[in-house]
Structures are given as structure tokens and as C-alpha cells.
Length: 208
Image (cartoon, rainbow, N blue to C red; front, side, top):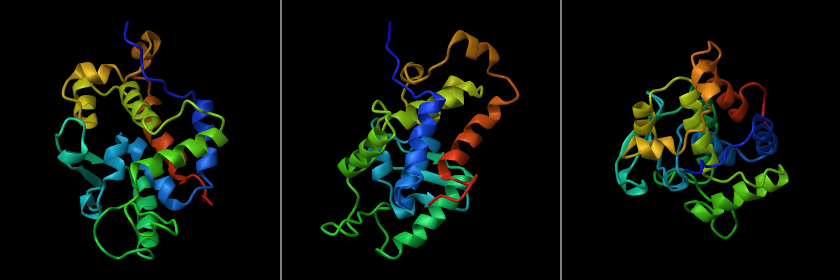
């Protein structure tokens, strides 16, 4: 029997978000994109300014940054777009040069590309404060793919969105009980992803 990756209960998710609300805009945007576009840690930290298409609200995930070495284009929500605009204005105060999207703000590495390890440390610090230690940089990806399945997406569409070579990989990510499968066409389910990203990005209330 294949062991499914862990995903948080709704109460645990909200605990993590509550702590993230006090984080700088860069960190809040990174969490939003990690969930909204189901990005792996490497894909998220490797994003460049020219990978963003604000007109269509999409991101280009370059082949060399992916596990499968296949490029894909993924969408992000309007709520995440608002946070992205806020971050880009802030980023301009660090560097106006095109290049890596996420920059370090530490004294030692100011305006240098943010490393995978720095992002991992940010997430670890936050989740320990939130008292949800099982939450990792990959948890948002698991959660997003499960939410898409809950909303009735076909597995092939989820596999394409996630950048999986086969649907077998996708099925290992999806947490769906028999009860959820039978109820996934419930009218409220299409709003799940939108609700989650709104609470994540803070569009329901101002984040500080």
C-alpha cells in the first residue's frame, strides 16, 4: 500500500497562515505561489522576472528547474497577482535588474538570488512557531493537487498542471477518501481553491 504524503488539516493550515501573515511580502508571495501554482521548492526559488506574464497571470516553469526536465506554463490567481505586484514594487528597492525573482535581504547577501536553503529555513521557522512541524516546503504542492481533485479536476489535467510524466505520480499526491470522491461535485467545492488562496494572500483583510 502506497503511503500518501501528509497534508494539514484545515485548523493546521490556518495556524500556519496566521504566522505567515506577519512575514515580509516576499515570504507571503512565495507561499502563495507554492500553493497556487503547485510549485516544487526548486521551481519556486528558480523563478525569474521574465518568467512572469502578468497579462495572462501565468508563470513559465523552465525545464532546467523541473524534476522531469519538461517546461510548463501554470496560472496563478488574481489574489496572488495583487501580492506579486506588491512584491515587485518592493523588489525594485533592492534591484531593478532583471533576473532571479526572489532576492535575499540579509546584510551579507543583499540582492543576491534567494537560495533553496534560505526558503527552507523560513518555512521551518514559521511552522515551528505555528506548532505544525510536519508542514514542509512541499506540503503546499500536495495540498493544491488534492484540492484540485476535490474540485473535480480529471487526473490527466492535474498531472499536466503538476508537471508529472504519468498519472501514477499524480495519484500518489492526491488525498481523496471514497466519501470525498462521491461528493466532489458539491456546489461549494469549486470555491475551495479560491477561498484558500484568498486567505493565504490576505485579500480578505490587510496583512501586516
